[in-house]
Image (cartoon, rainbow over all chains, first blue to last red; front, side):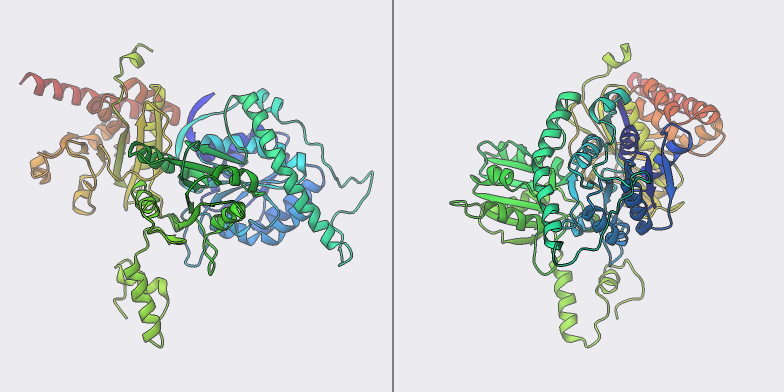
Length: 419
Length: 202
């Protein structure tokens, strides 16, 4: 049924339609509305049978999820930002144990400086944790990805993160098509655990493994992620057949066929990117876009096929590897390794800590790329004056003080006057 | 359904920014506007400005309405229409920032444009006033102007009908709160319609 609802509400209803049996979560912005709605659905009996476990921290949330999933329950949680970091030890255990937990990450920046706004630093910090990572472009896709995520997780026996832009999507009220329970039941079979703790058939999960077998167990994690590269598009196809919508999969191209300039992005920024592509086309440029819908496993072949014939690629990413540069950009270069006349790849770090990524700014960076002015790494809309003043202060003042407070004071946002 | 057919198609996307203060229902107003547009068969997207909101502090929320699917999620920098829930904000924030020339500004006030000191912008923008807080006091019993302003919006910008506004209010609220807001919306709608007719006939 078509409805006009908040993204968080859409996700909560999608998760409820997947009939999770255990939900353990700790509230943190911007994910809070999702778990609040789910707790209400459990309390009023709409979502049953399901145990909603109020935990005292994200570390406990993921630990409870691990226990519940190992006991054979379909298990869900949601978090963001510092909350994701707080559960990291358990995040790695969940994937190492191959437990098909589904977790929404309502993407938000990581401090310090503390910041509640959207970027991808949280999810990107867990890109090597062994979880599958899917990124939603819209609230419809966020809803759809959750249905696919449970099926995928349980089929390949790996946990799945569904990443959706915090606030930008979670708090946006948009039109979404919410499927019926029958439709979801038809798409998502009951959970048949591949390994289960059963008192009637006792076994151990989580043994200590020494050098004699650690490499093999870890390799099998990698092998399963590689298998997921086949499962993800297959499940997206099955979803399209069942629901008549294109959602999920590995990558999605937009006006790519003859494109020589391609903008790559993840998540809700794709809407703006497609607007920019349309503008560029009208100006006579052969522009296109590539949405990376699955970042882990990395769809190397699909990215290579989509970008191999381009002349320049602009990768817009909402996180970066400090001291190295773009994260998605590095992966794109890996995909283009060995391609004859490979395109030049420009990493554009944008949208950090909630700074809007505007079509005007994207037009500027694409113009720079077209005219050969763009470098390997660009921080979009960086205020270089502010940065240079701080760098000078660091060089010249033996006690320059904290950058964040210095910059806020100069901008008149924090009081105290110049030092 | 007859009403839905009667709505004109929108020439391009309509972008609305709502200014108010924390506690006035700014975010809810944007959401209800999007629900009303959805009920008219249009595509709509509502979202708050994200930050630490405090009661009484300036708050903005946004709404896009279009006949085509809306794919952009960037903040609205150049709105076509403003709804100003509290006219004291004119002294505190740059309310008109980015507003397109001839854009509509719907202001909650019982005072005149001259009283508000807005004569200098009256030539550039279409300023429309409605005493929404007074109407809310009268019909709702509380000084929450959102419902009345949505009714006024339906009269001033013909992309949503009053029925859709009432349905959106009833979808979100129940009982006396819903009916009080629906009544305030209706009163504001009629007030503005009478106003517009008067000016047309003058």
